[in-house]
Length: 409
View 1 (cartoon, rainbow, N blue to C red):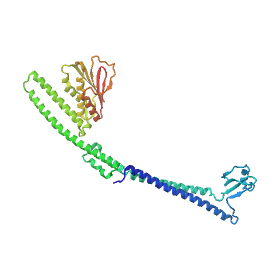
View 2 (view 1 turned 45 degrees about the vertical axis):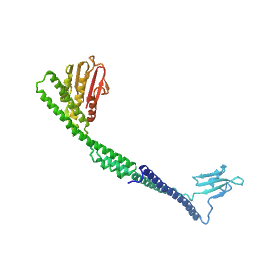
View 3 (view 1 turned 120 degrees about the vertical axis):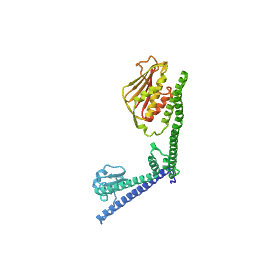
View 4 (view 1 turned 60 degrees about the vertical axis):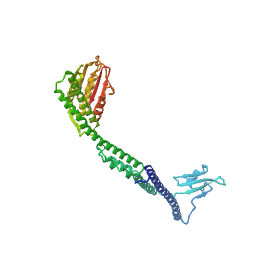
């Protein structure tokens, strides 16, 4: 249980990390300054002890140019301006100040030749300082990681729990694995609670979907079975030609109702017992679909041509593919205008084309363009959804002369 929000915890973590590093770096720089001061004084005392009793005051003042150290005389004769100067090679620090002598200025010289450390000693100090700075950097980086990791630990924990849930196969109790109450009342707790409620609703929906499809499959098909049986009994009776036409219409309506039920149940199912991985042949389904929908051509002068350029095998849901083919064939039969023309079903290795003419002047000079399936029947929208579920592709190509429905796999 966390008492502060995630935003506040992250801010506190950064503040603590910066504060600790600032204090450590401050002490380190202060120690370096004090160490440098002590080192200079110690070097001066050691030099004075070495030349005792001839101890001279350092720095020293000079009124005359000729009294300056020999290395500085030529420079002093160039009449330098007032200020401070450093001579690295000669190891002198010089201050030029105004004075009441003949030259109008005096010189204060600090000889650092005996108090500056040797180059080897400087390298050792540089190595020590680099080691200290590197150690502090590593400690600071480790401290930052530790503090930030602790601050974002609830987010990582929630992500691990969500990642362990198989979203493709949700069960009714998966939402209970979130346990949102253990994340507190901050932003992470709100997110965990939202995910938990969402998974709970999805799980409940899946349960309802399975119950509905199971019940609907039985409750809707039972009356159709009764109607089909009654129609078979009527077919055995002596019927007048008018009654036979009515009976044929009832038979077709029953078949269409059964097909519609199969379509919507197929789309409603979240899972279908691995049927989406079956392999089946395309040509038998094409032939069956043409025969089942041929009654739509009664009274029309329409020819149907099946052009089998290949014998493809498709992987997917066989019932969904059969429903899709029936819809495409039915749509072509119903939307061929003028009650004449040609409907072509062409089967290739990776696609199926259903072409119907919408004008008797059709020719090959027009290039069809892809269009929406709206306006060509509800069945094409269902075909589109079934193709998406199975990983197939569906498109509708039209021009002024014909309509081409293409299903590819």
